[in-house]
Image 1: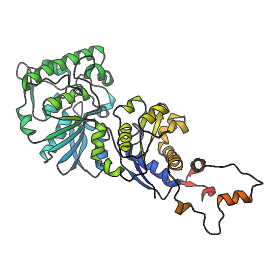
Image 2: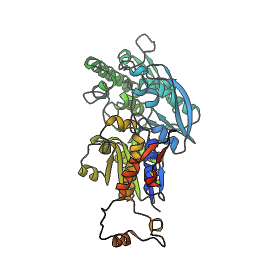
Image 3: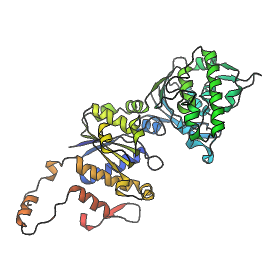
Image 4: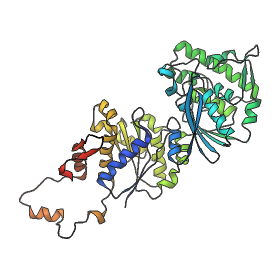
Length: 431
């Protein structure tokens, strides 16, 4: 019996990682019902990281914390034993901006700090923090304040939230942060190598994606430079140029400089989290994917990480995606045997978004037909039934075109119809 492991990221804005996996599994089973298929949702350290942990058996711990503009949001961290998995995107991320309105100068990471504080108060001593998808550029100041830091202006008053307020910073008191973090290990999932400041810094590179115009980018970079000067004075350490310091608007800087965090590639951390190494052992095929396969995929994104890990275990990998713009040679060099895109079978993007699960089932059927060998015990001609070779001999005078299992997969999908209550049925040709 063949074994398939599906370890896909989400199709952003369309399907969750779990939905992608379930749809591909359904398609595989339509062609190879005897196949053992496991679905392991993954992420690269951004949104979906907590969901991956929950799917791997962690428990959800609900928390209410301030979002990037201060409004309370309902979020959760994942917990197993004394390990907490915290996802910045779900509390301080772009997805949490009210009405989708950018707040480049005032957005804060405070809520993420409050979730970490809640996990520590509950007894967690290891925190795995995914920092992709942030809405702000506050250098991690909000996160530190939630953990007990005091950031004071020249008059001894607390400064406001957001990156712009850092320009008024005069004094930092980190005593309560150090007390709270004693005995706590912080690991940060980080996939960028930007420094905190300068032309490749948090404001210059990522500020425009968060709504900052040219003048605001300049103001934020100056504020982050002042922030780094103040932190260096308070800690005796200057890590503003450390690779990854500019991640998540500077949260990476605060984490490594003040919290003593270790930065690790997000997909590497998540694959450990879900036990990928143990799950891939004995698999005959791995299926991974994300919404778009492009050059960015090859630099730290989830599918590339899965391909590398699977190749290390000697298991072939194929990818599913919404759209693929990578040439075959680039895919194969990265460890992918093949890639299957929704856009290749449905050029209408609106339909790809609306009917993604059905189309993924179709891709799953093609993967099964093209990459999984038939089970000889289930596909052996039965007694009294002639084999396809015998039938072709009997009807040699009437040759029929050869049809592949992949052709049959297309026919089955084409015959699908809605039975009125949301379930799909098939017409009599395939009963």
